[in-house]
Image (cartoon, rainbow, N blue to C red; front, side, top):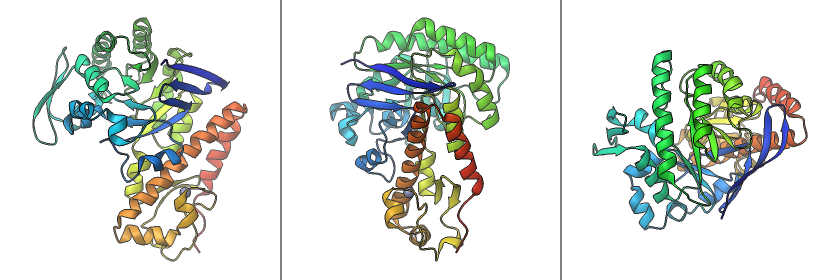
Length: 374
Ligand SMILES: [Zn+2]
């Protein structure tokens, strides 16, 4: 009933390894599909697994409001409730309270807010966040933090980061000793190196099972994000998993792995799947575009997903135009498959000591663009 992180190979800053939990292994670098409201939208859990996902992310904020953590706990926990037996990581609720809830009030104690669903009043504190994530049965629990907005002044970032570090200690204390479950701390400090360093030192002193880089992918842009990762990642312990929250597009992911990130999550592949945006090795395309309407070829002839094996571009175009439910199902499957294949490609390349070769090919294929219209 224990957890561990084993590094199998490194190539530059890039690493590949395995996080072991009682609910199964997570191969790293790992991409976590987002199951916001106890479902990865438009996908059956077994289909998500078939794309190659080892772990899902669940959102504390959404689940505490509906159907509530207490109800999920009474029904046997989140794994049983949503029929996903493998590892689940839950966020702390902090980020979504600030982005979704109304009438938010932040104090030293925590955040009070009104539900965006029914206007009911709630409070999340570090202690309550740990309780909710325990009730859900999450395998990887995130410390409660304030995601510092961007842009912000250096003084605002410092105040916010120090509050998050006090909350990190309270999260650690409230989490207690739970064999088989991991607690991750979250580094803040915006884009300021000295603040990232202070945050990393504070977290290391408290001691966590893994460390997230927080406060990125909040509008600073890819260049600034990667520049921050250039110094922020290396401040975190190398013998523990490092998680970049809320990232991202395929080229963000490759850039993050290159800089030593082991885990990522993003709604992008599933959300894009419902809005006709396809991600392929040749870049992004819109299936509603008229160029696809007579095209009998698959989205990507090299892709082994059920969508590309069995359906044409013309069919995808038609079902999106007709707003059929299968449109989101088929494209979400493909997009998640593509993301997992990207992760497997990076794991293999790092193990083979050729991440640079992988990266060069990744960018070369995208530069080619989509196949020529018929
Ligand atoms: Zn496909």
